[in-house]
Image (cartoon, rainbow, N blue to C red; front, top):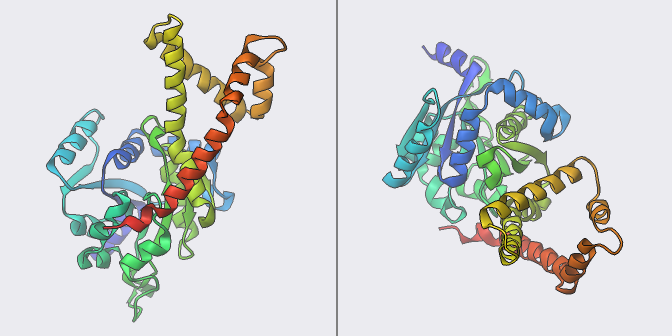
Length: 331
């Protein structure tokens, strides 16, 4: 029976999401909504992970999913979200059973609140079950060394038990990869950044890149860049939403219906972003629109008089500083 289990797990694996809240649910539904073949194709087009790590083909990919939540309300919300998917997805929902959820998993997505890190994985039964497994953390401000500190097993356990000549999972180093998707995961348009720990294998990195390609694009960065990227990728959807909201107020003041103005403003922002993604520099896009003596330059001058450029840059700097201390508020 043990050998049969190993064969099955070689071709398909179990993903557990600890703390399946808003973002965890978005990632889960994104994975369930996309076929593995489609993700493979999207990854070849959209991933900025090193090419030696980017190809997700031939990886043992999750076919079983466990979502762990803390409250009955969260469990009911997740059931409603999953009910919209057809056919019904293979998801087990557990409430407050972190140890059981981790024991059954090959890969764990750590998606609780940053301040709840210790209470989420600090229980001995949970830390023991996590030993030697792949952990993907999407906790803002929480570093890989902080997670290793809670787990207490940065290096392989000893002695190194053997299974058919291969070190057992419990004797391998725990592999931790830190990632930061954003709220656009809900529409499979997230910009995700990721950085691995030294123990992460090429297969670990490829699998994580494959998972996040299900909800958007993926870029591998260094640990020192992570807080800045958390601000740039994680926080700025709120900045952009505020800018659109401001445009709507102005449009309504000029007599437009808010619902129509919202569509026009959002589509216009989307179009400008697509031009930049196609290779145009932001300054070039601005200059093409701001023709001499036109109305656009008058609006741009007003934004410059109100110090929009410096205000936005300062806001991003403040976000980066705040992200760097989130992990220090653990319960």
